[in-house]
Image (tube, rainbow over all chains, first blue to last red; front, side, top):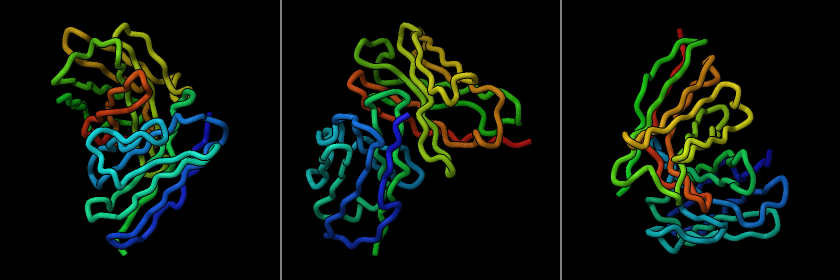
Length: 107
Length: 119
C-alpha cells in the first residue's frame, strides 16, 4: 500500500497569503495524484487531478505540481472561502490512499 | 447535474452488518466511463477508500476491509449498495458514496452519512 505523507497538518494564514501544501508518496506514482477541498460538514470536492490539472469551475488561484514523489498544492492568494481542509490522494495503485489532510485556518 | 445520496441507519450495534444504499440521480449508473464506490472518514483514520463496483457487477475491495465488504449494483433502480459485516467501534465514520471516473477521479461525492457503532 502506498503511503501519502501530507504536511503540514494545519496552518494559519491571512487573506491574500500564498499557501503551499505538500504530499510525499512512499514510492513513485507518476502523476496519479488528486487534491480535494473539504469544508466543515460537507463532502470533499475535487480541486486538481493528475497532479496539476484544474477541475472545471475551480478558481485559477489553485494549482498543483509534481517533483518526483513530492506533490504540491498551491493557493496563490488565499480567499475567505478557501479556509477548509485539503487532502491529497494517490490513484496510481490500489488500494487508493489519502493523505491525512491539512486544515487551513484564519490567522 | 449528477447527484448521489446515501441512505441507511445512523446507528449500528457491534457485530451487526451495516447496509447502505446510494441513489444516483441526474444521470445513469450504467456507463463505460464511470464506476461507483465508497469512501469513509473517521477522526482516527482520516479518509479511507473502501472499494468500487462497475455496472457489470465487477468489484474491487480495499484489502484492509475485503473480508467484511460486499458491494452490489442495481442498474434498474440506479442504485448501488455497501454491506460491511462484523461492525465495531472502529467502523464509526461518515460514509460517502462517490462516482469514480475511469480516469481515476472521485467526483462527485454524496453528502455522507454518519454511522455510529454502539450498543
